[in-house]
Length: 74
Image (cartoon, rainbow, N blue to C red; front, side, top):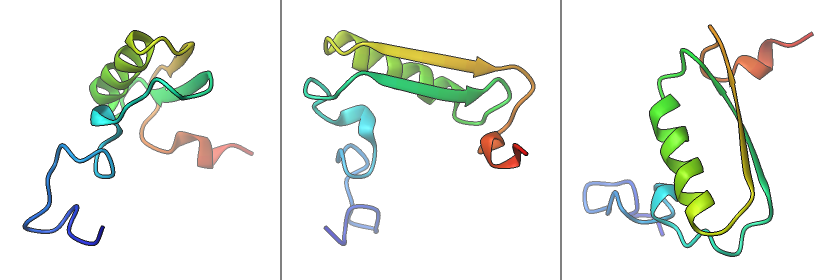
């Protein structure tokens, strides 16, 4: 949908934020997040919601790392 993030978009639409999606059918999830990540709290919330949906979730928090730190490897 084109209007998901526009002025008439719904911020609770799962296409805009997976926090609001039906997570029950996901395969096991591994998340990586930086300890200084601006989305750290959101990542923790998503991991909790996914776990509560019955999905195996593992989340690695990497100290002193920021958003997309994996792109700096190598």
